[in-house]
Image (cartoon, rainbow, N blue to C red; front, side):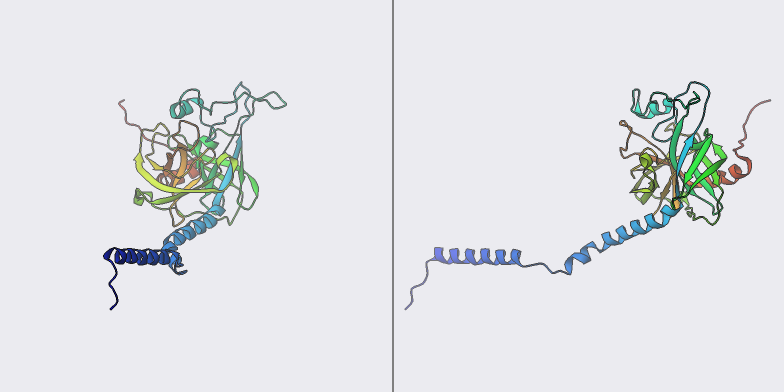
Length: 295
């Protein structure tokens, strides 16, 4: 009769069998069809971003501005165009990296301030939305279209209290961006910023709506800003903030930063504010507001 194995040997063989099975399970190739199913949602989101960037970029423009002045004034060179120095001191503190550089003169001896920003086409006949601080005091406005055309623009109207400006180029059948209802925007919703940071035209960044109704941030008097963590940098000012449907929900206007660059806090004017004053800017070139007083 065969002698029974010792109990210790039985346990050892069982443990060895379990170890071999585990190694075989790890070494077995996973099904090639498993990965696509797990990444389908991410691929759909990626496609949404790609399609949005491709379609919306056609109506986004890069803006260069210049101004000749006889007095001794340095070029404006802040990250959003023509902001004055005290604006940057409020946002970045004294001694910030966006203080005005040494002055430079044209051959005639006059100062030649310069700046740049972004904008987007709101009507097929050439009306463009941008920021007041980008074009409000400019003598010459040059618009660079997505199809590489370069055209001179005229200032139609500008409102420093809301930081909104309308310019126009002489063109027809231009692509435009649809306007959303910014009152329906939700915190946490995906948004996309398109503009020309540091002169790099049609750059696309994405993030979420961090907050709504941000007031008292020292930018404009009549706007409660959309706060976003989409990367907004010098040159994005005036460009569109869009939802995933490709509709404009805001106008990128400023950042909060201690370094002068992106730190995850950007501000955009709600597009409903643009709708509110657009017609008046087109017709009158400015906004007339009533005042309550005592005679």
